Length: 117
Image (cartoon, rainbow, N blue to C red; front, side):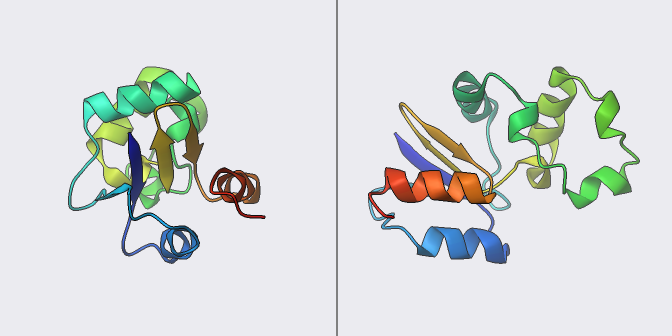
């Protein structure tokens, strides 16, 4: 399995995806084709945390009046399944590895995974 979950409208996602050869990867635009419960469970197997997959920058947090500090693992799971903006992105997943988000450390790990710098 080689999948990448992203948003076409996200400039950061586009910049990150453009750095790699993804010809043999399944690219999933999560607004058009939302993440499934099974896919989220697969991501969770790699991270052991729904919170690690949760975007604390989602505009939906403020719109829904959520206090992220009060959320539990099950809440993070349900929110990610409920609205695509709650998934931290991009998410690159293989049978053995997962790379979540756009922070510098993650992007460097991706470059290393793809044989880059």
